[in-house]
Image 1 (cartoon, rainbow, N blue to C red):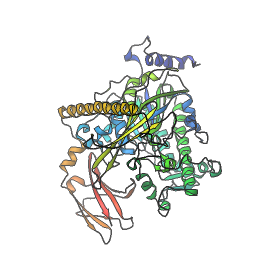
Image 2: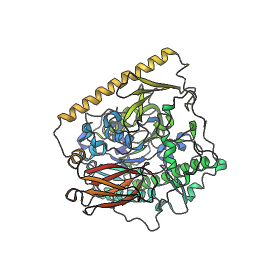
Image 3: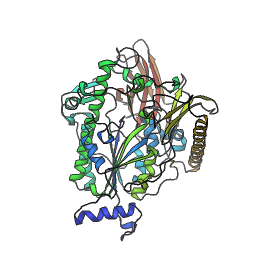
Image 4: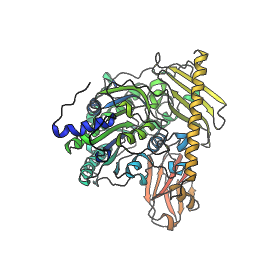
Length: 584
């Protein structure tokens, strides 16, 4: 049992919080209980490479300190291991087969069933909170989810600028880097929110350790290559079907200048060592920024009434299993850190029970006393915030990843089910799920890294049982999806990005000049004047950005860009229009 030694002034909120949390009687009515604030750290591409998760070579003192006062979930899994689908799933509380977001480009509100969905921050907006984001939260930001604005700070002089390399070590202070600037804005926003006097939901999106690994020299110096352990098991898993491998991971790295000339195949030697080192240094940089924000929360005396959440959108591979990046259903991709500090709950607790990221939405509703929307597919795990609880885990958690034909039409989906002992993955045709392409089975009691697919040697009864368990779960999920879709069709129509897109369907035309690499874009001035026009490359980087001023033709010069497929995005308020651009 953990005992709290608090002053009389501080003790009452914690005791009342604990009584509410555990369902114990309290002398105040629910209406008199002060609403909890929520400080929500959302980190990009962070696997549980933290000292609090037992990774001894890591320097993450601020996150470790948070874990010491919080509940740390050892088996938290995302629903698809790539940024946009994972974030759309968690923040809407629905699975990817409901969001229909399977790649980095699609905006979830263009799915008819979710055109008017109430997102996680939006449920707080609708219940009297001030809701603010700083940094990346949704991949395509959703303005209607928020009602507040972050503090306005000018970028500092000398800020670090991305030079196009995957590894960039710069000898400058942390506050001049992208996440340092985000932390500074979050610190200023906290003071602004305290002065506002209302409960708040503040989401702070950290970009690192997502590529490129732009890191301060001081953090790079913490991880000399001679002291770092090599990647575990750099061979491909044995007996693995080729469809399970994520070739896109290497493509993401090879889009950077310093990786272009590397030999084909997985990275090896000093390049592999430096990439791992840079990833670890990026984590330490992010850890320091998270510490700055939490320290300000403490300084403003807001900690006692604030739930702190730290979570990542998905994991990452650093050469393990002969692979790099994400884009697969392996444990290294789906498993993420999840740490939650809840007022009144015990600290320094580790939970082995499995949870899914879409469970966060109903859990935060329960912890803050908000009524959960009917569309949620996740399950609240509020009951796990009890000292040394032995509450049963979910029987399984689920992830998935698609495979595409050349025209980007999904024709195969890999559904992966993680039970407390096994990972069972089935690759099946879409929309003909009875046609199974391949299966995978890994025993985590004997093979936690998933080095060998034992589907061909396992007990046939076990395989049959797991196969049926997955089939039954997918049927339940399909029924939930149908219910959400039916409810959406019956809802009163409201303006949405999807509707605006339909109205503007004929307002965008692109005429390429292949020999010069210039694309001329024609837009309707009445609809699009003042719009943001961006060109995004295959790994999500903005390579060209400008504002449409109402001219008849808008030239986009991509002559200095590499050949390949790009996406043109035109955005104005709730309207958005996208179109593929092929640069030869």
